[in-house]
Amino acid sequence: MAVLKKRQVSMDKVYIVLVNHNNYSDTIECLESLLKSTYLNFQIFLIDNSANDESINNFSTWVTDGNYRGIHTNFEYLVFPATQKPIDHIIINESDFNQSKELFEEKIIIIRATNNGFAAANNIALRYILKNGTDDSFIWILNNDTVVEKETLTNLMAFYKAGSDIRSLIGSKLKYYYNPDILQAIAGKYNTWIGKHYHIGDGQKDLGQFDNYKLGRYDYIIGAAIFLPKLFIKTAGLMCEDYFLYFEELDWMQMAHKYGFKITVAPNAIVYHKEGSSITVNNGKQRDTFNAEYYSITNRVKFIKKWYPFRLFTVLPGVAFAILKRLLKGKLKLVYKTSASIFKILITK
Image (cartoon, rainbow, N blue to C red; front, side, top):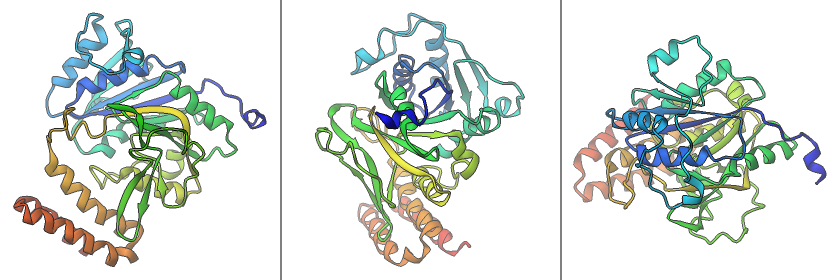
């Protein structure tokens, strides 16, 4: 195709950023799939903001021990055979990493961090990349509860290189991990009048029906897999840390629009996503729904106030209804904390 001649596909460096929160099993499965990638020039930053050292201890064992037996997967052809160990790596505390003037060359950099939210965790790596990465490098923000096809990273790079606009952010075709023929999303769409979003293609069998989907003004790339040039963070900045959990990718998409970046999706870049494994365990039982509900409601208001303040009057009734439903379920602590936070958001300039 003639379009492929615009920029040749090369092995530009890709920084892959993963955040682990009390979920080392999924993360190790994800890492093994990444290490099978046909695209070779990448480096992985794994930020662990877990509540204890269980994850770090398992990462330390996995990365050095060829006999590690803690890997469980539905995608044996993408995960096994396990990568030969030891893998070139370093395990370092967040403070030491931030203060270091060293250029880290290891294949995997594991950073033990304080839990200040999803955006803050990603920003630990993004600050380093902004400072030390070459201008022609790329970043892949990837959820830790994913498994990727061997060609996914290669296809993302080829899709970017084949395009006409270097100011582009690219999403992947997300499929359900436990039902891999079914789409989880090709992208998301956000309704600014009611402050709600939904996944495009969710629950549909993948027949290629969205392979030519063009993202509109209120569409966004799902945060489970965002591929971007370093140019984006150099232009638009890091993730907004005001949200702690949820709405980070929506905020970033607004920054993309603000600075004239195109957002699109590579349909042949396949990612299998468990979705929400840091909030729920694999069998679907709830682990920490309090925080999930709290941040999903309060950040809905925070996002609208920041980007579409003139639509607060249409969003707030839906928010009030969401709080009322929790009240009727007897979630008094959640209702009190959520209501107090929303009041503070609304009165703060």
